[in-house]
Image (cartoon, rainbow, N blue to C red):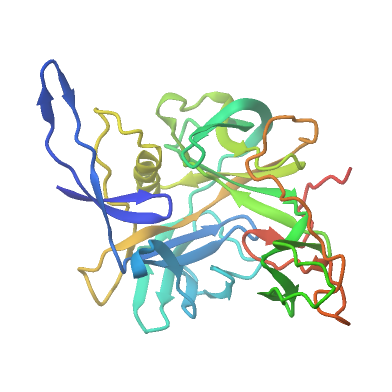
Length: 385
């Protein structure tokens, strides 16, 4: 049996072998993985919150034995309102396509995603109707020393568990997804390994002139203006209201925010109301991301959503377009007194102290470049200490 498996940013085919019988126990044979090349992955989200909608288009690549996802530049991407006929153009921004900052969807409206790649290949989604959201009544954060297990470090890491409270409507069947964006002050806007920052990029470190001290292994550059790092979920958090229908839900665990740094952090949480089809997609994705290899765990299914190539019924398109309304809540968390080890600590500062080239001006800072990973606009709810 061949299935498709998402492992963080990679797509694999998994061949599941039979089980070997050994005396008094049964041991599963470890699966073998083979990377699938040239698959299109489209993850699109049209939100009822401003600046929360985006589309990411990647193609899997195994060039020179390096497995990675390549962002597809130069695509024409639009959101289409099937009720009004409105067409919203998305603009390419670094490695993401975004609509105008004031774009939002409204409950009851129906949307479709349209994509035309630079080579002319077309993709589109099935229609998505926006379901009314359920309001968050309260949000809280609790620090945990063993918040979650990270495979890259092989250990549990600290962080904050985010919980929400809300009144679950009895008259409707509801499915929930929680997404967050966190904002931390960015101290260094550029780090140049074996190089210097000039003309907007890292350049090769020039050889030192006679009598000039050797160049540093790397140079660091502060931010010219206020700048914030943006991070998002590492896990998939969803809920079916089967056992809470019509109840008041208190302190439900909705997100896990690791301690990347000890900088204060603002967490903007979205409680998204999903359709049944969208919930099924995210449930499959969660099963794969959380798969712990237990003997009884079901094999991962293909994470195929509602996207297709209208000119090729046989092409497999991974990912999904979701149009959904949400309730938002923010919480500001002070973390400067936390003594646990940071996941992503700052490197030791290494500023230019002498001109890299005689008569060349010393540079100590770099601009804050807007992207989905950083912003120079102060987030709403930020508190300066």
